[in-house]
Image (cartoon, rainbow, N blue to C red; front, side):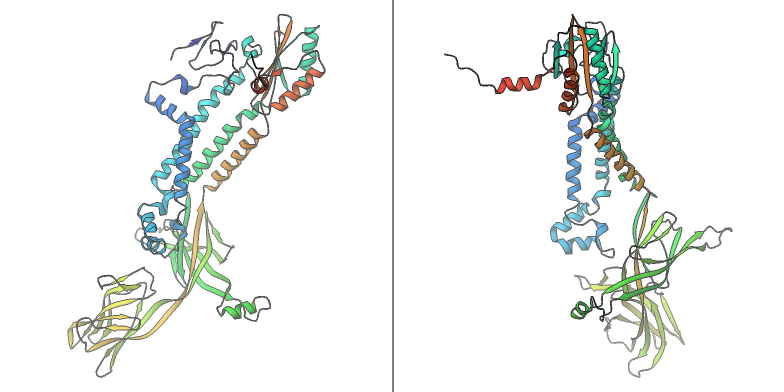
Length: 547
């Protein structure tokens, strides 16, 4: 865009409020106080608006756009708190069923709209990314020109610049040079950085506080990056695994590299004779867990040295996992969170002839990995046509399963015998033995069960914690930096035998006035007036009535 030329001859970028060379305000004949927020410099968003990059930059550099993105993010975040997120519902529950059964129609809509996993949804990630981009562009758009303006600021300022500061005054003194030198020494004693040019002085203190908001922005950007990295593979793991006693399973979130074995699960309950809790335990009549732990072994999968050879598991860690005492290995940690006692593991059955009562063999079904067929010998065999781990009858009257956990197992068996080569069908469940296609000559009888204790572990890995901690620390530094210090400047110039004084602070004006008062008390200078306070007095003063 066109340059803005000052009467001193300097060509300033479009959008400049105060001339970069002489300091003269470029706002025409305006007599109001100068807007010193960005030192009157031109920002990129005010200078370029031609290409698509310029338009994107200008859009995200707008404070209004940033505020609206924050509002939308807050509203979206609040939606995720109406009902629990999926990570907080029981791990074995089916979300599609859980939300409807627990929260009714609203819960069903909550699930169907995807709000149960809101914080990992693509549109929420776009909101977070937009907020980070807005913070980054808005900060660069302001901090770079502000830094240049403050670094190269002139000592001698135009007379109109001085007059349009909030604190401004003119003093008649007998000895200008002696007064200027005394004022300069007093300001140095006040820890001001004093610069001098052609007998004029500018004293500055607390410039670093101007960068506080931008340090805040940097901390927030790093924090948001840490939040977004949680959804990148390998950066964050928060999984849940059930491990039965004696079993070795792959640890979720490790890409099959690590396995865990549950050697034994140990539960200790409070003794009803306990001096402290005994009476309460006797009243409740229910055993209360005192401590529960898992004797765990972690293995690492070793790559086979020969093609086609099975991978070998190498033990790398052994630990008794207790609540608040996790097992740590590599970048992972395993936490004890839950348990289940006496979960069904195997069921034994016999094949019997109903009329004679003869038994033709026994077979055992692994409820987690049943075989398709069990050969009992002499032409007797049992086939598993269907298996329902947690069965129920649906609305159509057909058997179905709620989950993959054998809480209520049921089978459809086909019994093949020498005299019944075409087989007979039987539906077997706990305390159920149905013959859906008519009366059979043979039956499947229950012969016993085997149970196991099961432990529940949470698998954690977090490479984003460093980003979150660093971002939070930088944010707090910026907050303190911008809240407890202020950028103060005092200009003292000799003009036509008088001394002109002006002062500016980005906040904490009382402190600036106090510093100036300390200088005025020990020199011939007069205290500058506060033009804001003077204007307020004029507006509130009672006006004389005219006849």
